Image 1 (cartoon, rainbow, N blue to C red):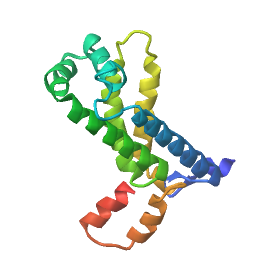
Image 2 (spheres, rainbow, N blue to C red):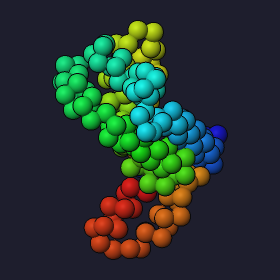
Image 3 (cartoon, helix red, strand yellow):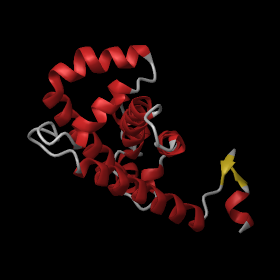
Image 4 (tube, helix red, strand yellow):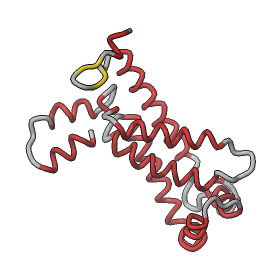
Length: 178
């Protein structure tokens, strides 16, 4: 157990328990995003029935958290709701697939971090919502952005071994993403 916490070249030595834990939590978090993407149903995203994404957009407008965010929702998102419905669906599907597969997991963490901030701002003042849920969404995304978690039980491990000897700025950027 102490091998997990012993320093190794200036960092934490990644024991197998650590790698498995990070990989499993990343996969579960990715599945959570996929599950949330599943109820964003085209073509109207709940507009006709008054449910789904349409309902939650209206909750965010009715219970604003921040005036700038509220203005964006009412002046940009609401008039172009269907477009933003598809963007939301695609974004959440990307986050979910990226983190579940461990493929470009840092990028998935970054997009998840930004999306989680948006979701948090949208529901923070909605009655009966447990705000700590949304803070955890932000925290997990920040965690998976902060180090190469996709290399643990993920496809980023395969890509990183292939990229390690490649030269050029593009390869180095891609190596950081994986």
